[in-house]
Length: 206
Image 1 (cartoon, rainbow, N blue to C red):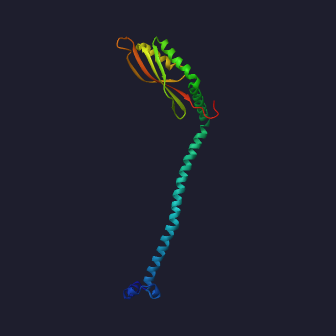
Image 2: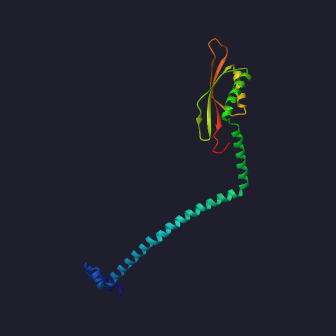
Image 3: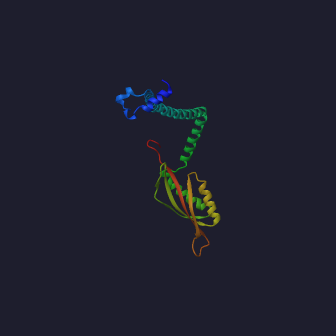
């Protein structure tokens, strides 16, 4: 059928009769258009239901592949540097062991207080008071705060702080306050917040 005949047939056909019940009498051109529409629907549905899902799976697998490559690179780096990492871990454990040995135990606290008094006397200053405050519980250690009062001169204070920093046990000094020891006194008074730390041994650990 020529194109002109098909166009004429479509022109003469009453479009109100385009129903599924009388599809058999549709002009060939209308049938072809309907067929193309059905094919387009089938292809579109196939893409949406199958191809689209496959694209989503592909994107997911691509992301997994990138993550696996990153994990592989990290593990390959760790494997290549395993000896160095072991040596570093051993150094850290030794450092932690040494640090822990500098933390006083319960029975060491009285001796530590005596050492603080000795540090004051050795610097020609006078430790007027070492007052223990309530302990503070932290995650890995117990903090023992102390109020310390030292009387003397600036040189004595410097010697005292230097001696405290050289103790075998860890003692940190905070919040220095210096004022005259009294209205008629030539001495100065230094008030210090001192802290020492006790390691919290885990169950079964000495």
